[in-house]
Image 1 (cartoon, rainbow, N blue to C red):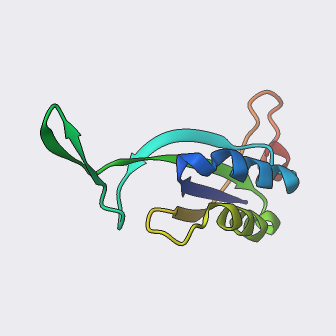
Image 2 (cartoon, one colour):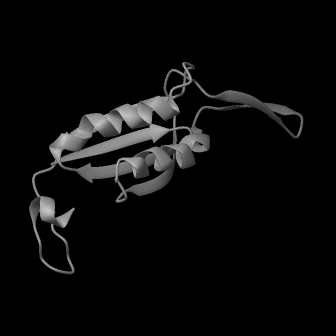
Amino acid sequence: MKKVDCIVRPDVLEDVKAELNKLKIHGMTVSQVFGCGLQKGKKEIYRGAEIEISLLPKVKIEIVTDDSNVENIVDAVTKVARTGNVGDGKIFIYDIQDAIRIRTGERGEKAI
């Protein structure tokens, strides 16, 4: 099993979810997060003073899946989220040792 973490721009969330639904990927956790990287943030004027905002809003999508779905998920997310500009996001893939469905006690891939 793998965990796929996708950090993307907030405006592409609905498109990413629609693309994942086409793959029959329905289980995911979505969080609003802030981050910085090469994008470096932006400058805004607040009450006449220039302020540099270095942490920009992003959306983190977490998906735990069996190994065979990982490349399809990566392809779907990059297809929708890639604009070619700095700040499109990142995808991280982790190994998952085990998963347990609390309600039934099922373990492993049956639990996801």
